[in-house]
Amino acid sequence: MAADPAREPSDPLSVLENFVETGNESRKAFARERLEHLKEQMNTLMLFDLAPGFLVSHTARMTRELEAASTDFATATRALAVQSKEPLPRDPDAEVPSGPAARSGQGGSRLPPAYLQILEGGSLRDGEPESQAYVLSAEDAETAGGFASVARHLRFVIDLATEGSDGNRPPDLTADAARTSASRVIDTMARLQGPSGAGSLYL
Image 1: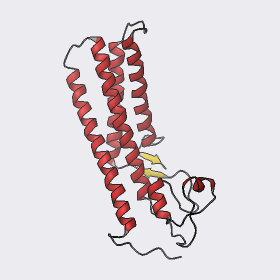
Image 2: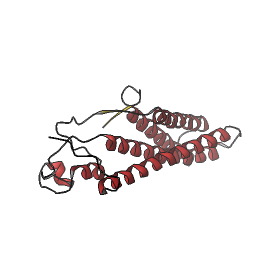
Image 3: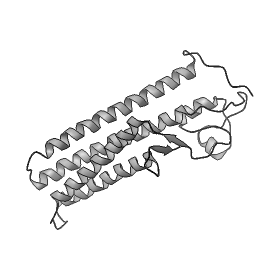
Image 4: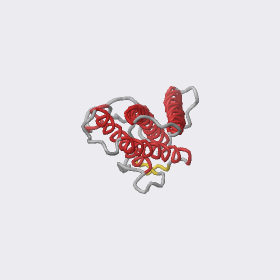
């Protein structure tokens, strides 16, 4: 079956694709800006001899902000990776499951497959494996490494600030939450970079 002809820029599907792509690119760019801002804060933090309690609370706040930015970055990167995969030709008259029905394999919708791919973040390619490698760009791989590096550093600062503590004070509970948050950032970036850490994510 022949592939669909190229769409005009004014085509509704092209407009939707461009809107989604622009939004996710902006989301990634903002996440990078937040990462660089946190790096600057971290470097400034190291210039002062701060009280452990203040250091813990401030570092915990930075860790929460880092986690939020890393989640935005990972979500946008995956969404763009899904969108970049070109769907195989498909019968435009075929009914396409959508929403919960799509996951159960029942029901139908006349909405074109490409719309569902964009809106639901899934893939409608026939015979496609559930997991497919997508190579991160050098910039994205560097950003992912930057998020993980800052998370490790913040976790190290937390450990230093709570060294010798009995673990029962309020700052220690804040420190535990910060360590958990930093670990989530590291795990998220590891999944984004793939099992080998070579900059491949799996969709």
